[in-house]
Amino acid sequence: MFASPYLVYSLIFFLFPLLWATYLAFTNWNLISPDYEFVGVQNFVQAFFSESVRAAFFVTYKFLAMFVPIAVIGALCLALIISALPRFKGLFSVAFFLPYLASGVASAIVVNGILSYNSPFNIWLRSTFGLDINWLGSPVLAALIIALMMAWKFMGYYALLFVAGLESIPKDVYEAARMDGAVGWKKFWYVTIPMLYPSFYTVTILAVGLMFGIFTEPYVLTGGGPDLATHTWQLEIYQQAFERLHAGYGTSIAVINSIVTFASILVFRKILEVWGAKHGWE
Amino acid sequence: MVGNSKIKVTLLYLLAFTVMLVMVFPYIYMVLGSLSPWDQVDRRIIPTELTFRSYEWLFFGGSDVIARPWLRAFFNSVFVTLASTILMLVSALMVGYSLAKLKFKGSRFINNVILFQMFYPAVILLIPLFLIVRYFGMYDTYWAMILPKAVNLWAIFMYTNFFRGLPDELLEAAKIDGASQWKILWRIVLPMSKSVTTIIFLFLFMERWVELLWDMLVVNSENMLTLNVLLAQMFGPYGGYPGPMYAASVLLTLPILVLFIIFSKNFKDGMQFVLK
Image (tube, rainbow over all chains, first blue to last red):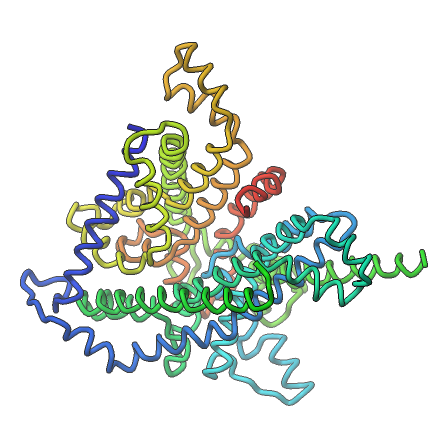
């Protein structure tokens, strides 16, 4: 009886739309007109040859290559700082977590301001180094900026996962390592890092998964540009289905997106597992 | 040796403090930008004087442009987020409790389905969900923003795990005393899960508060928009008014920050469970 809210919800808002989506993906419906046709795999063929879908596919891996290392290493550094502090651990972990509270819209507005042509930062760059950089106009920089924004937002959260991992390392492991002469960097590489492997695994998979669902930051800041350099899956689906009203085609892109996401995460899990097993970590 | 470690600790605090400044810098920039005179916004980091002109523009409109319904949007955000979060919390409490403690037929199956659903990419449901909402006549109403976000799988998962750890004896005793399951849930189980509830509430609230895509899709008329959506839409045409945009950003960020700081005492305890 208590489970009924879940059952009703899943039926209306999960199972039914799931079936509908599967059907829609094979139609040419335009979201408005009452009639539409079953077009078979035509949508999928069209998506395969579409420039913007291909852009979304590669942009995601570009974001991944930028965001995951920055976020994971950054979070690890934050966690090491927090756990090394003798006091005020709570204060600093809360402070590092604050960016997680930011709405992507608000942070996009701030980043846009900081990078605007006459901002103190750009004036300083021009006057000191003679650098005149069009930050959001450059494909590589625009993507990097969005990756950094995401890293800023999620680092503190991931750091908490690492802190929990660090705290769960039993003291006697360090004690035993010290007996064997592992101190300083040696201790870090041969004790801390292997013992942190489970947290490392979780954080990496979370970070990878996140990259397949980016919408707010590029929508507000770059609109997917320049030259589709920040055009994500979500943006592509949104534009096809709700701006160009190709509901059927949009759904088929969503299906492709799901498959790509699923497969990519599986591959990353496998890589991490094989890599962990090779080093004898669990 | 002692002096050396003292220096080390000082350096460590210095480092921690610097990192903290970097992490909160965008917030500081936003607040200062919202209080700057309009000719200094994005021109100086620290303004020479402070003014509330941007906030006045936001709430009362300016002479050159019509004020947008920011206050209404703020109210919409609060209403939608609160309603949706409370529904998610209550439903997760009920479902989590029933899955963990009331062993009924099919509960293991439901557990597995929930896990599957959690990892299922939600994006595939976006378009059909929109169609369902439209079909039921909920388009452009609060219902469209609340009902499809009334149940949260992650919250159910968290509560189920937490309730599994609660001792059965206590619940049995209450049952023998004649308490109904409903009463047990509210009078015994809920008070025992305070810290976990706070954390789940915070995360649900945060996530709901910053939702953009869905709220943008299902609502059209200006006085129904949430603050997040209104800000995202106004940012283009009113980009030439950065001051008010910062003021609106502050308005968008402040409630969540305040909420978080109020509950930050429970933060550490609760997080320890959530992160496990």
